Figure 1: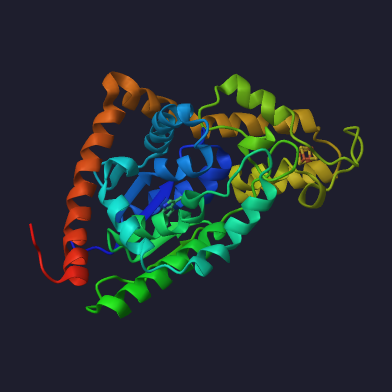
Figure 2 (figure 1 turned 180 degrees about the vertical axis):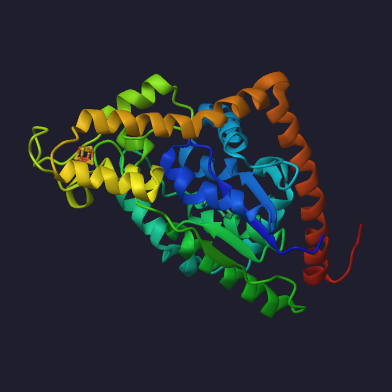
Amino acid sequence: MNRVRIVSGMRPTGPLHLGHLHGVLNSWIKLQSEYQCFYFVADWHALTTDYDDPSRIRGHTKELLLDWLAVGLDPEKSVIFLQSEVKEHAELYLLFGMITPVSWLERNPTYKDMLQNISGKDLAMYGFLGYPVLQAADILIYKAQKVPVGLDQVPHLELTREIARRFNHLYGENLLPEPEAILSEVPKIPGIDGRKMSKSYGNAIFLKDPPEEIRKKILAYVTDVQRPKKSDPGDPEERCVAFNLIRLYYGEEEKEAVVEDCKRAILGCVECKRRLSEKVILSLEPLIERRMFFEREGKWLEILKEGTKKAQGEASKTLKEIRKAIFKIDLL
Ligand code: TRP
Ligand code: SF4
């Protein structure tokens, strides 16, 4: 298999929602047919922020896996694995630690941002500072050439490239590629209240929400506030939060019809959002089946074990080359 290799991971911090689906997941699914993909649960990365309350990480790992399999990540095509069971990541992280200047890490925008903005938790930890070094190890241990990520991860990927460059410069051989980001086009997915959809804002529609819950949430969406009554003409494209979902879930003609009828004040918001919720529910229906299928008899766990073995095989090959590049001689 000579296809270009891709690596990406997610931290197991909670159930995935429509924002994840239209942002990164759909892109992961598409990439599967073109690239050799390694997708992993970044449980060590979760520990950098949840070190004082790690009890939920294992449960979240299972949920993350079920979300992935439900949306269509395919273990026949991709290697799906658990970071902390491929110890090679840790060894490479240690080796990279020897060549990564502290100043690179201290100027990392995510680091500075989170230190300042997360209150009630002390994040001034060695592991948290080293977060991008671990991420570089995750990527380079598979010699990945591309990494699908969101915009917020671009500085981390830049650090990965710098570490690869420095490694190659110090130890020669051009062993490590400098991976490039694949930025997924993220359509705007606002949550119920109009802010960015996020678990922590409590405004998200989760992939595993039952239909009743989805109906309730969509009915609660903010609409054109200058349109308190159905008889007031609306301006969906400019003023309605729910319309951002309509853009995603409706075909061109249906969408135009909504705009028309809303502007002419003949379509009411309750009716409009009822129709929208049925569309969203329909689109999520196949996920219910697949989630049940993979949860039965622990299939998801089999998949995770199988994938972890494959990943480990690949990781240990690279690590052998890396040890050789650094130490030149094998002693034991
Ligand atoms: N830092 C990424 C995030 O928070 C998760 C991650 C860890 C990752 N290691 C990675 C992503 C390697 C891509 C490649 O989203
Ligand atoms: Fe938004 Fe539909 Fe209400 Fe128009 S009718 S404001 S598009 S919810």
